[in-house]
Length: 240
Image (cartoon, rainbow, N blue to C red; front, top):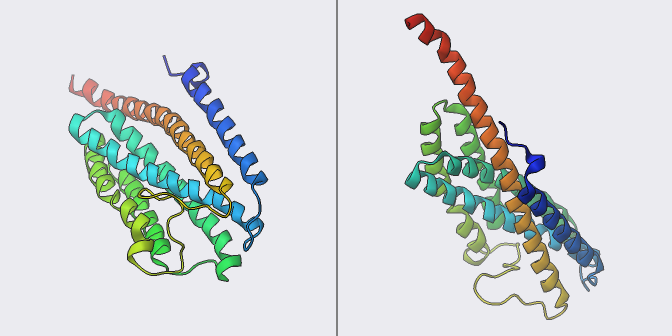
């Protein structure tokens, strides 16, 4: 009997909580005061920063799930690694688009080859290659092993991209949310709270999307195995 997502109360509840958190973040973002210099453009930060965080989280998840697959050889970890990589690529694209919309009125151009932007673009090449290679390998076990290694190596992107604004001089601002030290929002402390709520909401969104995509990946894998057995059945009959 197939898995019926409509009967999955955990997914339904998680989706509802995620929607509530995202709605709260939107309301707070719209009610936040305008920036003295950027005006309403500052509200792009409330989307841009959480999407960037989600892409980090997703790429980190790809490496972690890949490592767990290598250690356990359980296919569910490979499915989650795939799901996380797809989510990461999606939200990296969202991060780039949001950044371009913010860059044009502030920098005067949509794109510059700044260290942060360049490494972000390169991540699309790395994880796009990850997804491409998965599609080129038919053997499930070999595909999972190769993908896990690529996912682990690709995870190096996260610290490099995060520290790019510190290691190389460029036009991009320094980290808005610092892992070391405290963020500074003296001019409008509400910005920090809005970003915190937005980041938590997008974290829930990642978990929700990962769960849903993982369920779909399990279905796809089951169908792939059924098709393989159906292809082998005539051969076994002929041998018999």
